[in-house]
Structure formats: C-alpha cells, structure tokens
Length: 229
Ligand SMILES: [Zn+2]
Image (cartoon, rainbow, N blue to C red; front, side):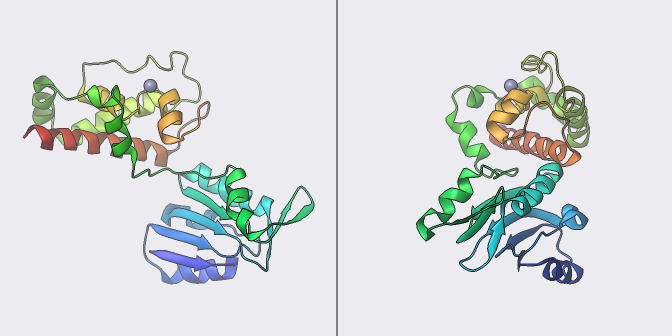
C-alpha cells in the first residue's frame, strides 16, 4: 500500500484508517518534522521528495533516516527540492541538481534488495555454493521449521553481536545447510553483510534484520530444493 503525505497530521489520519502492514510512505514535500516511531512495524519504505516551494531541512530528513535505520525500514532521500537548509545555511538548488544533491547526502538504505539473488548469481564465489545430497537429506529429516529455527540461532549467536572477534571466520564451509546458504547469500559475516546488504558493522542487529537474513537463507534453501527436485 502506498501513502502520500506531507505532514504529521496526514500521516496519522492515513495510518488510523489503513490496515496494511507493509506501507510505502512517500513524504512530498517534507514540510515539518514527522515522527514515524509509532508506525514502524507497519512501514516497509519511507521516501522523501522535495518540491519547488517548501524549505526542506536536512535535520528533518536525518531524523526520519535514523528511525528507519533503527527499525529495518528502507529509506530513500530522492530529491532536496528547490529550498534546502543544512547547518543553518539555506541553499537554492537548481532543478537539475536536486536529485544529485539528495543522493550526495548518502542517507539511502535498502534492506529488501530484490536484486540480491541476481547479484549472487553473477558472483563466481557465491554461486559456487550448492546443497549436497547429505544436506538435502538432513533438511528432509528435520523439516523446514527446524531448519529455520537453526538459522535464527546461528544468526543470533554468530552475526548479531556488535563485536565479533573472529568476524569472517565464524561460519563453517560445511556441516549444516544453513552455513552453505549463508556463504551463498553473503550472510556469512558482518563484513559481507555490510558489503552486500548494506547492514552496518560494529552494532547489534535488530530483530527485523535477523528476520530479513533468515528469510533470505530460507529462500535460498527453497530455491536449491526446487532446483534439485
Ligand atoms: Zn563473509
């Protein structure tokens, strides 16, 4: 469900009548500081777009970005609009530069990267991982619910902590189908999670990020099972 708003009042009015739990919120323009904290569990993506009339404050954009960052919501700052203020200085930005300047703020976050599976296909290293007969038999014996529970355990214990002394070496190359899936999808260590998924290092993972990683692992395993059947 898409929602277009420009003020706190409009946001609250929309969310009070909407029952959808994966809303893409477009704020056009960002007229005032908008607090989305109350709705984070129902937002999938937030986009900020400036227009040619309202002054857009960098701190208000950053405020939204930070809430998205903490809650695993994708965020895009698509355009500054004509009037943009940062550090107390008001800039007038030409139409041709408004998108580029927004991109330069470097605030975009993409959690649910639909291109991930296309990208891993292109990587010789990632695409070399496959489930072996033994792994498939193990999955069949245990059932997918158990495999998913194992995936949560591995992610929580080996990837979630803010500091991992052996990062890059915490995921074995064999011994469990989830380990194989982790290497295949670049969910093997925090370095790879940052490079491939944009999830920052040196901080604890949120529950939403753990959910995201497990969903990718299970999706990859299901793809493998389909391929082999
Ligand atoms: Zn890695």
